Image 1 (cartoon, rainbow, N blue to C red):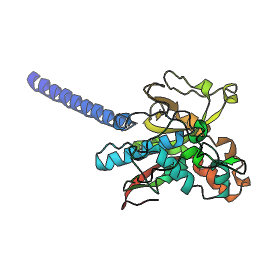
Image 2: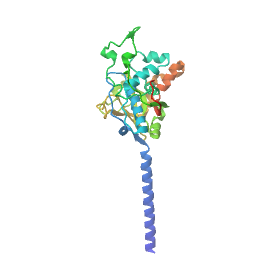
Image 3: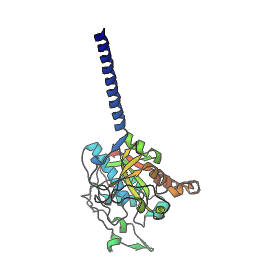
Image 4: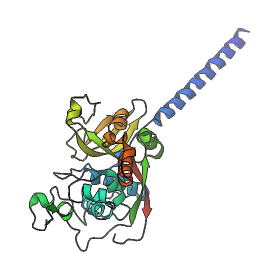
Length: 300
């Protein structure tokens, strides 16, 4: 009788332990699916130099990841080419041309959309840390008081070859950025309001800005490459070299991205804008990733 009771108790305990172990493994698996970090799958962090090209560095990081994911190769794409394509093929409205044709800057989603037209290796057109306007290159022409587009982009080498890869952009609402990263495991390009006083330059950690810190504000484009659903923080990749932040990366709270996208001040009055401006603000307020498309090589 005692032995029988002992065996029964032992069996019950053993079953309980197995159930507990199963629950633990399930919990660990669930927790594993609640965070993602793509940094080990990315190439070296680059530096944009003195140019306003954070957008093309972010877009190139995304495109390199998509090519690596599909082919297993580790391409180093030409940010210079992406910038030139963006300035020449994506500024399709008068608003976009007025905003970007004669300035050294670009919205992140436009840099991603440029990869719908062409991609190129860095070896075909190496990136320069300063543009023609900054180096006072004689090829930088001023037309009607404004520098021409080539002052900021330069011109592609005549024999440069393009790759057979394009992108189909995928836009993601700010409240779904983390969900997208967890589900699709792809980087996201995102325009943020950059408050220098709310960023720890040593670690790259972004804090929610105080009203005083919001007085000093810039537009910037980053690449979201990680997310932890428990802490609601993203890992982002910057374009200021590996010496900035944590090896070129930082973290940012989800709330910051929702409340402080670069165009946040314009969202409340969106209905007042003409269609082309409204479309721009809507796209600039979202994260953008993409799907890789393989095509026959051709020039854009």
